[in-house]
Length: 312
Figure: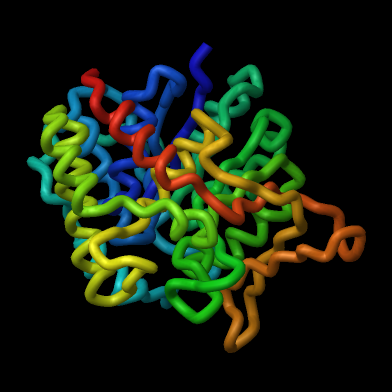
């Protein structure tokens, strides 16, 4: 049976690819998408999510969520985010409409009514997830696993050590990381090992499905922004962070993880939003996270071409 998931997104270029992978993979049953403030304002994230689903011809409910972090009303997003994503994706405007129910309430209602078989996949700031846990902590017993795209150990992308999704709402991230449920974290340490290149985009266009064409459009934008402002190990290639997290549900072998303890710093003037990763074996707090330390680029790109080459 396909694995049921909920994607919590701040769409966003890499979120767009993750949404298409989840919607088109025969191994995934995407029951809904929730949106959160992050890469851009939440109403743009919602519009972008609807644009993605409309463009590839799927009908999946979209619920708009939190517009600000839990505890930081003066939040200002990183300038690099707007250069990588923009406000609106380069796809036709959505004709579908978001659902009336707030994302946090829908998450609570859906999990309480579930059989405990829906993996939660937040690939943006963790505000919606933390708000749902605060409001109805009983949902935790119904969440079998949380697969997070976020965090970093060796290298941040907003500060020297902090990754964007965690940095956006570190208080929310700390709640989620300490919630007691099984967690897999797909950080920059893994996503920077699985790049998508301009040559791959040429192949996406050759395949010619709506999803591969849309992927070429958004990934080419990412490559231009990364080459200019965050150059990777090789030019002409960029990470597609959020899609790797979804692919890791389909095939766990696309990433390599270590079971460690991870917490989040919320106060340090130089370390705010840092995921503090304890690789000391047998010391410190009990492990709470399967933390990805590597990824298989060839497998990841092959999965994208296979799954996105399908039509709805």
